[in-house]
Each structure stands twice: as C-alpha cells, then as structure tokens.
Amino acid sequence: MACRLPSPRPTGETNPVESILSTVLGPDAIALASEEKRVLLSRLVARLAHEVRNPLSSLDIHVQLLQEDLTQPELAMRDRMAGRLNIIRGELKRLEEIVENFLRLSGPSALTLGEVDVRRLLQHVIELVGPEAVSRQIEISVESPSSVRPLLGDAGQLTQAFLNVVLNGLQAVQRQGRVTILVRPAGPEWLGVEVRDSGPGMPPGNRAAVFEPYFTTKEDGTGLGLWIAQQIVAAHGGTIHADNAPEGGAVFTFRLPWQAKEHSHG
Image 1 (cartoon, rainbow, N blue to C red):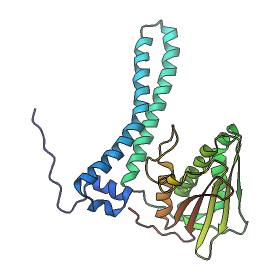
Image 2 (image 1 turned 120 degrees about the vertical axis):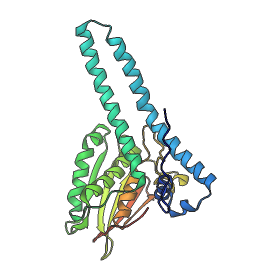
Image 3 (image 1 turned 90 degrees about the vertical axis):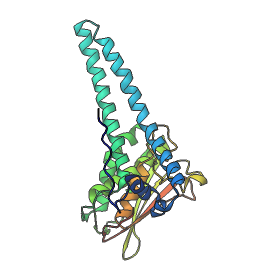
Image 4 (image 1 turned 45 degrees about the vertical axis):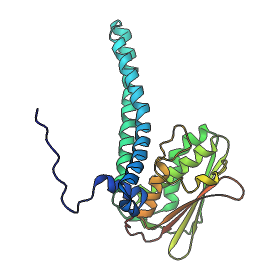
C-alpha cells in the first residue's frame, strides 16, 4: 500500500502545536527552543491522556460485559444490555466533552454581544447548581444592588464562566458551607463580581496555577473549568483574579467592562 506523505506546510502558516502552546502559554511560547516546546507539549498531552484514560477503561469493561451478556437468556440479556448501553453512552458523552474542551485550547469562539442582565444571569446560574448545592447542604446566594444596569457581553459565554467558578466553589466547600456572589459597580467603566466560598482556601503555591489548563487538586476534576472562565473573561476585555479572603475561603474577583469588545488573548 502506498504511503501518502503530508503536504508541505505553506510558508508563514502557523504550526497547530505552536498555536495551542501560544494560546495556553502566551505568545512567548513560539520563541521557545524546540526541546522546550517538546517538553511543554508532552506535559499537555500527558494531562489529556490522563483525562481520556478513565472513560476508555470504563468503556472497555462494559463492552466485555456486553459480550458476556450475549450468552445469557434473552429476557435477562435485554435488561442487562440496556443498563450497559446507558453507561456506554454516558462515557462516550464524557469523552466528547473532554475532546471539545481540549479543542478550546486552540482558541475561544467569537463573542455574540448583546445586553446582559448580570443579576438575572447569576440567578440562572444558581438555579443550575441548585440541586448539587442542596445535596451538599451548601447555601448559595447573590447580593446585588437593584441599580446595577445591564452590560454589553455574550450571555451564553458569561453564564459558562460564572458557572465554572461557582461549581469550583461548591467543590471547594464540599459540604455544609456557603457560596456568596457579590455584584457591585467598580467605577464608570467596570462591573465587579466576587464569588466567595467558605472552603479551606488555596495553598499559596496554587494561586498562580489555578487558571492553567488541566491544573486541578480534585480527583474527579478536569482542570479546565477555571481556565475556560479566564479565557471568556479575557475575550470580553476583563480580568479574573483568585485569592484567599481574610476571613477564610477563596474569592474569585471578576472585572468586566460595561461595553465589551472582542479582545485577542491567544
């Protein structure tokens, strides 16, 4: 069988590996020596492989069990197969999400700008995480003056950013605590939003790393939630900062412009 060689890359076209490294690590990554790029890429791929391995292992086990089910009588086989197939579908969905999150490393999608009622958006976020908060016995609330006006932004992406940070807070608290969202104007050009939790806070060495892709201290975490939130906020021309509150717990501070314009931050 003939082997087809890849077509030469046109002069000046960005290597996809360099594109990902530039997005994740900043434009200075392009200037790194080849050996440094290889090390950085190997770390990135190792983290992706770790995320993919668990659902793949689960799929392998349940396919083997399906093969065993096929030797059983028809009625028993039907019930068992239905359960196995549901698990397989769930694991395939998880793999799809892992791949989609990894592909986001090549760059965020464009913003769809419109008027965003942040207070209403945050109430929607609370509704989304409500069942998990109840199951963990965590109180979650929004504190905002009624005078906060809408801002110009992408409602869907901002929902994702706030959701990721709030979920991070719930996971940090674990059980029987609180997550509080504070909304307040931060001058004529900015809106400030703080997400505070009553968890243990962040070790000093982790504060600079929490927004790195695939960085996580949780056994079941993907390490992409906070990174995606930062990318979305940066695309709006804003900032997000992580710190520990003086009274304990972590606080994530958003600073969003009232009039967002798409920003390049790769």
